[in-house]
Length: 225
Ligand code: SF4
Ligand code: SF4
Image 1 (tube, rainbow, N blue to C red):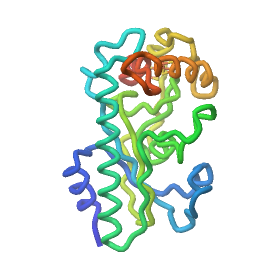
Image 2 (cartoon, helix red, strand yellow; image 1 turned 30 degrees about the vertical axis):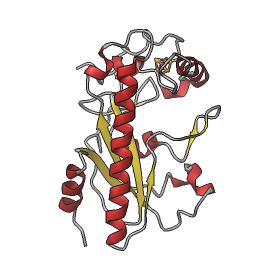
Image 3 (tube, rainbow, N blue to C red; image 1 turned 45 degrees about the vertical axis):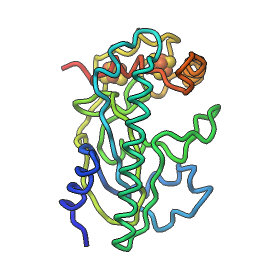
């Protein structure tokens, strides 16, 4: 059977250096995917991350740029490809595995996807929920894209935030930059509908054509030290 080192080497070859693996039993009841298929035997997951290069965000001031869109999509493509290859690799070893797309929304109004990659990433120790309601990963802030592979392989490789009490602390950098004042004290009072409305507006910009923003992502390099 494959080992932790085999998994690390495999993902490294796919260009994925940031990941974590572990149990997701306690949170799988939250996954919309359970409406499509049984996850009865699927109790583990791998959270995959691709950091966004700083250059992709440089030109962003009050709206997403075409360069950001391009890199955002390519990061998602890289994640989706790595997730599919990981599933095929696990299948060959006799495991069940399901690649969950990096960016596939089932219901825009309800902000619903097959599952929340953030929730899985946080559970496996990849980072914490920031004030901007995004994952904040140590060393990268919110500048990461995520995907998930669900599996029955009982593998545990805790992420870099595992066991640590991390949070935004005194950092407020993303709060004033949001054009619709959606960010306040934390995920609990994050204004989803204001953010959603703005992102939908950005979608109409010529050449953008998708629900992205990037403004608070650019602001977040993690808590101030
Ligand atoms: S994605 Fe844009 S609109 Fe939404 S909270 Fe961040 S800055 Fe505000
Ligand atoms: S910019 Fe600061 S306050 Fe905002 S999510 Fe990142 S760490 Fe938290």
